[in-house]
Amino acid sequence: MRKLLKFAGWLVLAGAVLVIILGLWFTVLFTRPKRTLPEETPTAYNLTYESLTLMTADNERLAAWYIPAPDADGRVVIYVHGRSGNRGQLLPIAAELHEAGYGALLFDMRTHGESTGGELTYGINEVLDVQTAVDFLLEQPDVNAARIAIVGHSLGASISVMAAAQIDELAAVVALSPYSSITEVIGDRAWQNRYIPPRPTRDLIVLFVGTLTRRDYAQSCPKCVLADIAPRPVLLVHGTDDVEVPYWSAERNMAAADDTVTFWEVDGLDHATDVWIVEHRSVELAQFLNGVME
Picture 1 (spheres, rainbow, N blue to C red):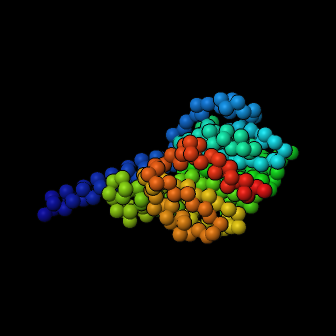
Picture 2 (tube, rainbow, N blue to C red; picture 1 turned 180 degrees about the horizontal axis):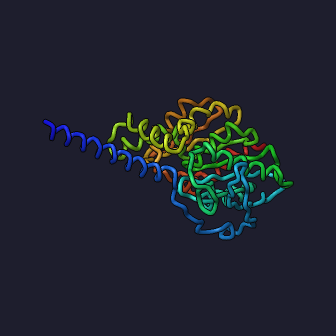
Picture 3 (cartoon, rainbow, N blue to C red; picture 1 turned 60 degrees about the vertical axis):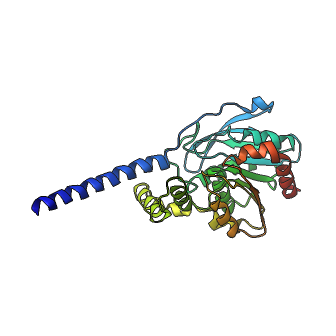
């Protein structure tokens, strides 16, 4: 009996060690995105631009490109890339909208590309990056302060929604494949990709990571603040075959939305809504923004 109890004790200890190791491993994956660099610059699209380094309120340096508007209307869009992306990810959309009269500010979020930062916080701190971009634009004489919009993809879309709820100067939001909350998307992917029950999986992961990083990731919840953006318009775009941010997120976001939110559901599309916009809907996207910027 004594040997059996000793063996059971070792099993419990081994299980605890395994849980801790897996938790530490997931925390690193969760908070340390892979850094990538742009494969092209605005020059590839014959766009005149300025390379910048923007300083956030908490002293992070953001690598950025500023592309002035092609006319005197002063309309400009801030672009926010996805996880492990960089300021070049949404450059094709920026080039399309430049043809329609929009300037652009593209930047590497903290912990991405050539920007500083050691920990991804899923919008808790990244909203400061967007605020820094807005502050820069407000200082530019060629920018109309009433005509600043934001376009984001995936993580960047979710951060764009959360930022707009806090930053009144953002006149419109275009969110391509945003999650409803980081907690929910963890559970969604656990089930969709591994058939692991969303609960308590997502709660345990967020609790463990939050304890180690001392952050409440429940704050990363775009659906929770959609109503705070009104009466400014929001465009949500989501593919029905998205496995990175499952379509259920779109359904939850729309359940929390009011009539200021427009939804483009793309049947059969995966997570590449940014590519889809360029290939199929750049004209309609410009029309959506034009309706706001009049």
